[in-house]
Image 1: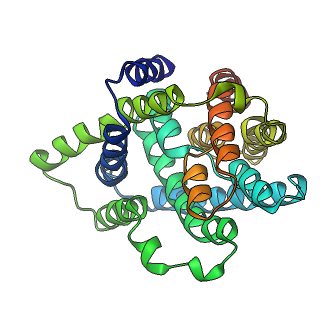
Image 2 (image 1 turned 180 degrees about the vertical axis):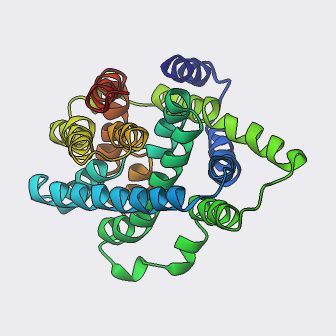
Length: 296
């Protein structure tokens, strides 16, 4: 994965990938690839046991997100409101789509995609409700329409309906859907590499406010989540998949929202850049801990 990021970095430096191209690639991932991942992940035999796992996974993901919000509000404090909102957002919301789904698929196969898709769905609900309202400071920004039109939500709804109705897609449909879903590994990594090629690394590591945020984003939250899930003896693969999602660096959405609502954009870029670079070290360590705790 990180070699793919390095390729994206090189393509960005050489101008092979441009700003325009990266935006179009992002659109492809968000509106085509991600929904295909959701649908492919849920194309499995229906059982009430599996339906129960979906419910448990959704509740667990919601509790993790809620705990992350509480930790961010409790420990991330700053007199500057614009900086505080950015740092809190960077702690709460990980890059669980771009960074986690490829790794979940690589390590856990279809089960990784299955549990990862559930986490992404819950993430999207929190991001486009609490995240949007908190970063903007305006509850009027909440919109059922925006939530309903979110590609991640649409993909999960379609996948769950097909799963619950026990509808198996024919080969001539599921094959191209699966091929498109497989793009979820290379395309996001190239996009991340491109944005890193444009980042100011010196600035990223001189913003003191990012260090505490990165500690919680990359270590405290994923380790705590892994320990609690292991102690509760939850499904081992779900525990690992959710730990991967929690250990991912700060979501790129942080910068998008910061720019939209006139928060500290430079700080948001620093948080995304620094956490992405450090995740090269922290993600393997945290995921290894999850494996050790679950005995998989």
